[in-house]
Image (cartoon, rainbow, N blue to C red):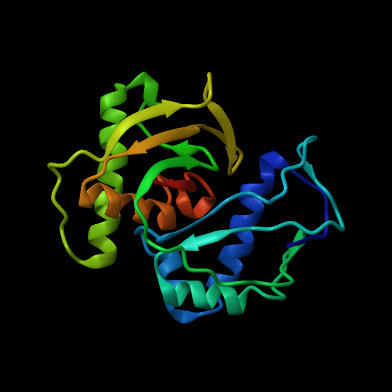
Length: 221
C-alpha cells in the first residue's frame, strides 16, 4: 500500500475499511455481501511496519494483510485491489498465500477485539467466563454460516485467556470511541477447538471484523 497522505494510527483501520469496501462493491456478489447483515468472513490488520510516532507517512510503502476463509473472495482481493485507490492510499501489488492447517497452540490478536454490550464496555456487564463464552458463540455462528452445519457447543475452546492491555484500548469509529482488548488465547487440543481456531485466523475474533478489529496471529505447536 502506497500512502498518499499522512494517516494517524487512530484512523488507519477506518481508512483501510473504506478502501476495502470500495473494491468489494465493484463486484455484484461481493457488493451483496457488503450490504447484507451477516458475517463478512474476512478481516484485516493495520499497516506494517508500525510507525513509532503513530503517523503513517505520505510517500511510504506499507503492507496490509487481509485474511478470509472464502477462497473466491481471496482471489478477488488479490486481483481487484491492485491499482485500487482512495484519497489516502493506493494498492500497488498483491500476493495470495494459503495458511496451512496445523495444530494451533496460541492465538494472539494483532488488532483489538471488540465486544459490544448494551452498557458499553463488556467489563461493566460480563464476567470473564461470559466474555470467553461470547467469543466461542461468535465463532460457532461464523462456522454455521460459512459451512451450513451447526457445530456442537459442549467442548473446551480455550484453556487460558490473557488480557495484554492494563486498560481498555480506545478505538475511533464513525466519530465515536469504542473500547477493545488485546488478547492471548491458549487453544484446547480437541478437534473442534482446533477447527474454530483455524476459522478465527481467517475471520478474526469478536465483532466488527470487517472494520479491522479482532484479527489474530497464531503459533503452531
